[in-house]
Image (cartoon, rainbow, N blue to C red; front, side):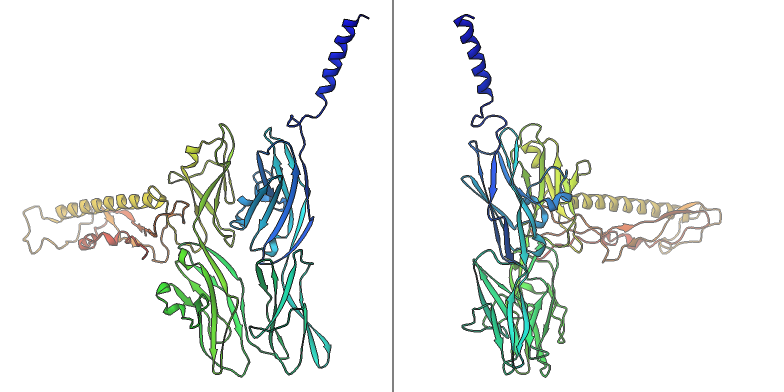
Length: 531
C-alpha cells in the first residue's frame, strides 16, 4: 500500500472520529441541571425559593418552571406549560435568572401549592432538558395545647414539616405580644387564662397562628377565614369573619376599619366607602363584611373591631385586599412566522373560585380558537394580530365592563337602540292603521272623539301588539365582564324588553299611545358608575 493511500485513509478515519467528539454548542448537546435543596418546607402566607443550576456553553432560548400536578390544565399533558401563566399562581410567581442558575419564588403560599416543581430549559435548536423534581411542602402554623402538670399547660407552636429557612418564635396573649417569649414552647398557669397565639418570623414575613383559649371557655378572638383576598375592579367581595369574647361581657359596637389607626373609623361612615360596604354580621359572633364595586385604591389591610361594656378588641393581623384589573400576556412576546402563541388572561393577584375567562378579537367573542382555563392558543399569529385580542372575566356576581372602543357592550347598546327604533315605527304604523279603520265611512269624527276607540266588527282582521314586558331589574342582560383593556370606571347595562306580537281575527284591543312616548319604557337607562 502506498504512502499516499495510507495518508488518505488516515485522514478519512480522523474525520469520522472528529464527528463523534462532543463540540461546545453542537446539535444534540445535553444540558445538565441540578437542584438544591431537593425538599423545601415553608409556612402558609410566606414565600419559598426553589433553586436550580445548569451547565451549558450556549445561552438557553427559554427557561421556565412547571409542575406536573397542573398537567390537566395544559393543552397537551405531555407538553409542560409555564407556571407563571397558570391562573392559580397569578401575581405570586417570580423568576430570577442569574448566570447559570434559576430561582423560582412563590409568594403568598397556600397549602394547595404543595407538590413537585421542575425547571425546563430549551436550547436554540429546540432541545429540552429537565431538572429533577423539587418537593415543596406548605404548612399551617398551629398551637398545640398539652397538660404538662395539673397546675399548668404547655403550649407548642407546631408545623407539619421542618421549616427550611431560619425562624424565630413569638407568643401573644389576647392580641398583645408577650415579652421575652421567643421559644417554640411556653407554659401557662391557671391564674393567667386567656387567648394565646404564636407567630413565626421567617425572612421578611411574620406568620400568625389561630388563637386558642387556655383555662377559659370563652376568650378574646377574631378569626378571618381568608387573610388575603383578591378581587377584580368593579366586583364585590366578602370578608368572612367570626369573633368571640368572655361570656360575661356585652358587645356595644362592632365595625370594620381600614388600615390600623389610633382612632379607627367605621367603614360605613368613611366617605371613601360610602354606599359600598354592608356589615352582614351581628353582636353575637358573626363579623362578615361585604364590599361592592371595589376599586384599586381600596387595596390594603382591613380589621374588625368590637367594643364591649368593659373594653375593646380587634383582630390583628387583618385581612389584606388586593384589587386588580385583567391583562393579556403573550408567550412568546415576539413570535416568529408560523410559531404557536399562547395568550394568557392574568391578574396581579390570584383570583378565587376558578373564574370563567372569555376571549374577544376586536370586540367580538372568539369561538374558533382552542382555549383552556385562562389561556388562548393561536397556531400562527403576528405581533399585530396579538394586539387585537382582549379577555374578560365571567365570574359570578361580577358587574361587567367592556373593552374600550368596540367592546360587546357597545354592540349590545347599538342593537338595543335599533330595536327601539323599529318598535316605535311599528307602533306608530299600528296607531295610524287603527285610526284609519276606526273612522266611519260617511265622514270624519269631531276632534273630541278622535282619541277614542270603537268596538271592531267580528270579521275585522288586524295586528294586535301586546303590552311591552320588561325583565325585572335584578335580571339584566349584561355584557361580558371586565376586559383586559379596561375603560375608565364606566359600567354599562342594558335591560331588554320582550315584545310579543300576535294576530287576532276577533277584535282590536285599545292601545295606550302615551306609553310609547317615553323610550325608557322600552329599555332601561344606561347606568354609569360614580367616580
